[in-house]
Length: 218
Length: 218
DNA sequence: ATTTATTTTTAGACAAGACTAAAAATTTTA
DNA sequence: TAAAATTTTTAGTCTTGTCTAAAAATAAAT
Ligand SMILES: [Mn+2]
Ligand SMILES: [Mn+2]
Ligand SMILES: [Mn+2]
Ligand SMILES: [Mn+2]
Image (cartoon, rainbow over all chains, first blue to last red):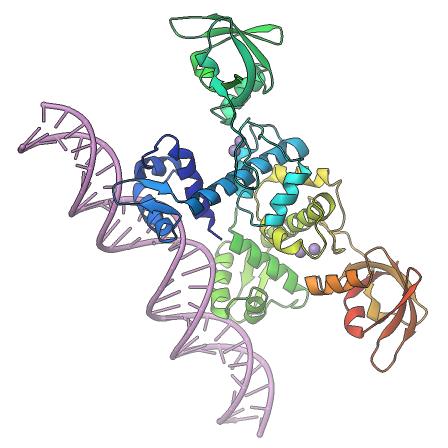
């Protein structure tokens, strides 16, 4: 069993490894954890002692097999709880993250197994992120950013890159939801802004928006 | 917001106040918290600083109004989560306490409000203990220990005093459940053991058992 | 009313996690 | 390649919550 702090560090390293494949830097981790670099160095040493990460001074940090397993388990719990909050308790998708940050640290194998079953083994969380199964396997999805598509192309919205309440509320306000068909009617070459068709109605969106929406390609 | 430790101390003091109406002793609290008296003294001082308890050296400790409110809120959350685990996730009544000990510390007003609604505002937890409402009011129940009844008397089993997994499993094994009618057929004056009728079948139980079963009297 | 036993508090230490300030290593720039 | 800027680590301190050992206060027993 690992502490809440240790679990949060492992999760952060997991998420940063995509952007830092050669090793997650101390500063990147400090930034992600909203803490100081010196605190990160301290924690990295502890995680390294426990064989959860591979660490060489000044070389950044990488998850070990067991470190990755723990991180994935925490992510699984986080996303299952998010589904619970939205599907069962009527939370909006922009309200669940904070609470899930707490719930993800509850320790009980039976709890998570039964919760998964109660929710009917969901494959994705309310933001379209994949929920790893009990073995730690993620569903791989062919997704692409809306910003990468061109005039005339279309696809189903299946996820958000930024899942901050602000962005999610913008989407709600403009009736953009997961599962919706988006058709690109126009794309301005100067600023990459787009005119899109959503369920019959038209909407003008900036590149900031289209760069944070995932579209199913397949 | 209070720490997990602080909440657990407040809850323990609340539960001990019934047995120690003039002030909960340091040793009683140390015992309940499975810690040392010196640690209790330290914590009591911190709680006193925060006006959660009234404390005078060597005089024991009592909850303040805000301390009691916090304790009751934690108990409310504990019991609601126990209902969730049994009613929704299929846990047995002897499996829920440990997990609820963790879940009771999750901080989210909306979560507990929506959970309460999702569970249809339950009045009692799986062990028959009353769930305080959102104002902190407990349902008062006229209950008496089975051990206090005599031959010929009967009543509905509405709660357990000891809710350890061992006792609960004994009850399961002997088909004693909440809501069940119990009729006292015989009572041995020497050792207070009883012969009871349960749904048609007869069972011999010791005083240890009858002293841990609550019967509705009304 | 003393002595004895019990309870409670203090004193001092420790571990986890975090912080600031300063030193050391690395990377970038000139 | 040497100087400058950046990143990372170390050193020392702090808070929370715990512990042991010893001192002080209270309660119980002669
Ligand atoms: Mn989230
Ligand atoms: Mn999510
Ligand atoms: Mn319980
Ligand atoms: Mn209970």
